[in-house]
Image (cartoon, rainbow, N blue to C red):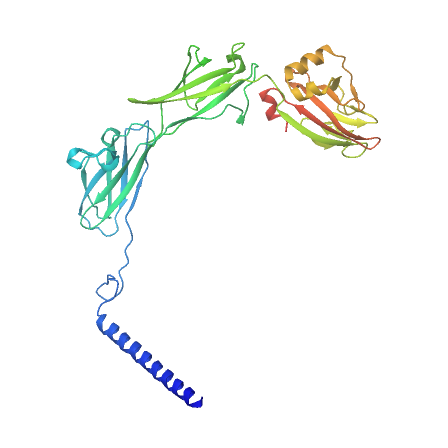
Length: 403
């Protein structure tokens, strides 16, 4: 057994020497054969690596109201005076001369090849008209390529929309168009790529898909198309508003579809009033807790009732209540609430025993100082607190007053 082990050890040692010798020979052969580096790295006259940048191209682009575009490029390895060939490529079916076929390919537009000379600052610019680039519809695009013996570059140019219309707004805030005489507007933006748009926007509307267009005239900047619930005829709840901007032979139209709603209370708020202290009262217009004696307390918890604050409810200021129901509250139609209020018996206090009320706040002598709303008493702790939910604000102007 010992003899067998000695033989195995001897063989193992020999094998390791053979493997090591083989590896050394292979490495020597590899090094001797590798006369050149794997990568050819450019060096300057001092032997240092030459690091160059890449060409940078840019464009302001083109919109459907622009007649052309320009591409600017700064080269990295070109020399001043070099001539670059510029091609304008677009998706197209190859002609017979281009090999034919039935699949769209990105190919040079025939007759659109140009040349440009590199300046001393290694910059160059090229311009194309919309006709030359064959840009017709929004999202059409071309690829501008620069190529020469010393450098090359590329820039994609896409035809974009110039005209857009936002949702209806009043005093800068989004509104839902309701059937009342309030006038909001549809803001329109015209953004061209070459300078500023100096024209007008021609607007028109029609009530219903089969209605006749009614001209609203030419609107100057800032472009805002008036829209009112009065535009909608009885029984017709949809209006279409057309806005068109033009520049030279180019024009673009956008159409907004607006569905009118029955008047409703825009805002819903919650609050808890305590039996005493700094949160016994509430300013319903800003949903802010105040003391009962505060001059802005439009609602206060006094015993088992809700009523106007003692310091506020003077000189004609008051809050009145008419008992209501869940159907009125959940329906949230302000015209129905006002009609029910006028036909009900108004009181200056709301008993906590009833859960639903229509309320009317008279906060001054002007018609604009009158606010209607719906109220639901959501919980009470006798002698301690009352929690409410209320809906308020049914004309656009309220949105800038009620917080």
